[in-house]
Length: 278
Image (cartoon, rainbow, N blue to C red; front, side):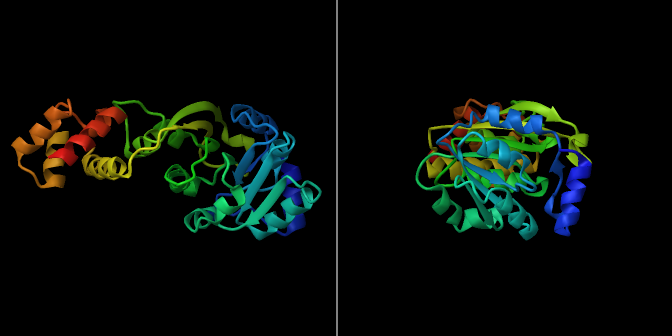
């Protein structure tokens, strides 16, 4: 699709890209092909797409024979997508805020009890919140293939030494992989940042609520002082004296002078387990 085509459609709809809704329309259809390929979409799959816009990715998903649930906030685009796929029984278009639909669990009524995948060009302003909402949901997707801001994708896939609370929050539940970078000129209007396709495979083992709660309680303490030694941030956060914190770190096989970005997922798990025992 060319930018002039997008402009013509928007004019017909009496609409314009809204920055507040993160509306940037993908022009390069080969990117959509790549997303469908990485997600291994096939007939019989259930796919949730967020923010279909003008339906470029929706079309590619529907061509596989998969069941597609597209969630769109903008009423103009809902009507446009419905008109495009009115004869396709496998495409369901929902008007609404995806974060609200997850929170009230109504989206899962449409998905059903079976497995599903997320394939979407996500609005940048809700990326972190949206990923967290699906990763912590009672009914998690088996895979997420999403286009997001390149910088965010790079942060999510960082390894110990450069970890952040964001990368920990995704990697605790899933194995993320940066697939490819997408230049800004692949969109209309071009965003001020480059994008990337992120492949997120959800881990099959479900963590215990006790471990999950304690791990992120400690992680939030640690990353408050990202450049400080973990011993000091733990003392401040737990209100423990130095010997008790040192004992906790020693039992967890973590050096007191370590900084939070240096810890792996397994390090945080051990730390959460030992903290519960003290």
